View 1 (cartoon, helix red, strand yellow):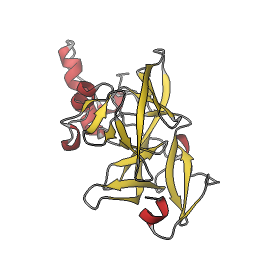
View 2 (cartoon, helix red, strand yellow; view 1 turned 90 degrees about the vertical axis):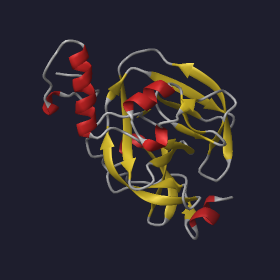
View 3 (tube, rainbow, N blue to C red; view 1 turned 45 degrees about the horizontal axis):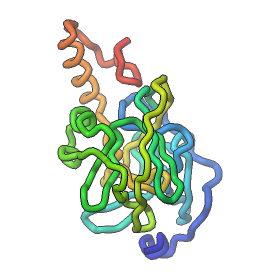
View 4 (spheres, one colour; view 1 turned 135 degrees about the vertical axis):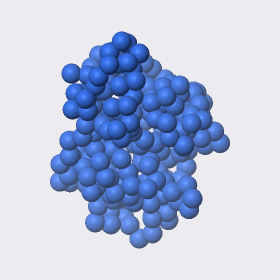
Length: 220
């Protein structure tokens, strides 16, 4: 199925000019590196925008599982934390994606899957992700045109601090990164603070204030 058949009268475009300026966020999340192309809609035209340029109010393409179709949904929040756990996925159509270990992809016939499912489940106590499985070479992931693409290679990247980006989508909580469907789940600030507070307590500390949480989840 083509994007036109999925979305009606919208026309295709290679890239949308004049990207929105992103709103700075303070939430942690399963994130992508700069240069990741996000499928969007602007003025009824389909196109792509780099993830670092996506801002609140941008309409991205998202998948509605209840209706079984791709549809535009607005971005309601953005974030840009620093992460050191980066993995690269290579797909059968020549696409390469780079993101954190816990990023969930939708695998056809299997559901949400990530490189580090235990991390995904523990970080994001979300109904959709409670059964996240380990993604495997050979898995078929859902694509924006209604088809699938095969994961052919997984490569961990050198561990070094990397600027990453993510955003929340209204309703469906997913979007297409480099035209592959991924979950957008991130922690709310309250969840992030609670998670870090519990971790600090386990390490022998006893007080964490909300404003002391760094963008990368650390404590100042």
